[in-house]
Image (cartoon, rainbow, N blue to C red; front, side, top):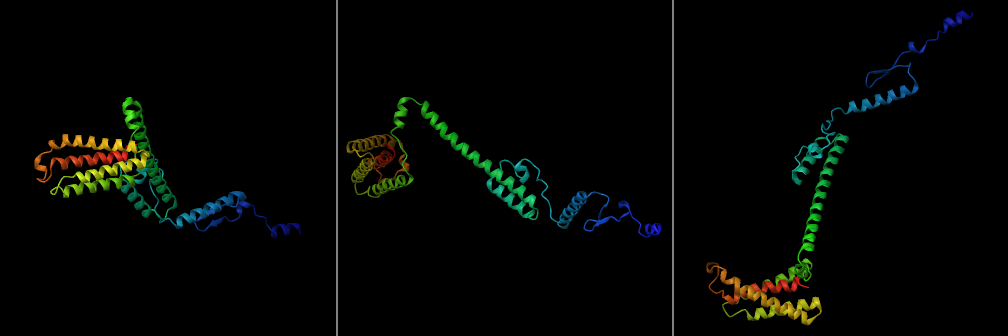
Amino acid sequence: MMNTLVLSRPVLSPPFLPNKLCISSGRLAPNNVSFLSRKSFRAKCATTTSYEGGGNVSKFPRSNVWDPYKRLGISTDASEEEVWSSRNFLLDQYAGHERSVESIEAAFEKILMTSFLKRKKTKINLKSRLKQQVEESPPWVKNLISFIELPPNVIILRRLFLFAFMACWSVNSSAEGGPAFQVALSLMACMYFLYDKTKSLARASVIGLGSLVVGWICGSCLVPMIPSVLLQPTWTLELLTSLVAYVFLFAGCTFLK
């Protein structure tokens, strides 16, 4: 009786059991492996299936290139427009591959950061060099620089417009008479700006008159050197000298402390 039962219910060992098929990839997962091995095998089959399903997506071939310029296919002296153009072209070409897009963006960001650091370093070097030259200059140069300041651009443009208007006014009225009235108005404006800055009438008067005298002397020396061919017949020596004086008045009330 026992022999009959044993023969009617045969026990098959694991090697004789049929192997499971990974349908998506056509691979066989043997039953004689452990449970963890089977689990990892199934995960591998699923990964392979998902990759093979999107196999038509091209992969960026230079993802592992260390140099960001070579990765984007540009030279190290490429302009900013070339960098952007190469980046946009590669992103459009490999838009379906996530790792390729990340590699392209990483190279692009690295190039931008390198360019920013170079610009910042250049500015710092220019400031440090200028500061070093000022420190190494003679004492009289340091004292002269201490009287100079750089106001905001708005103030510079406003005063430049004022003295440019005075110069145009002097040129247009040169046929009627000399620019004495315009020079007087320019001197008063220069002294007003200096007084508003220094709050000292004496200092404003000295700097204003000094700027006018120095400008008039320099104009008297420079104007005769100009070829007469470049000058209009109505432009007198007094007019041209006053134009030079306007420049000195503008510089005196704008950049001097």
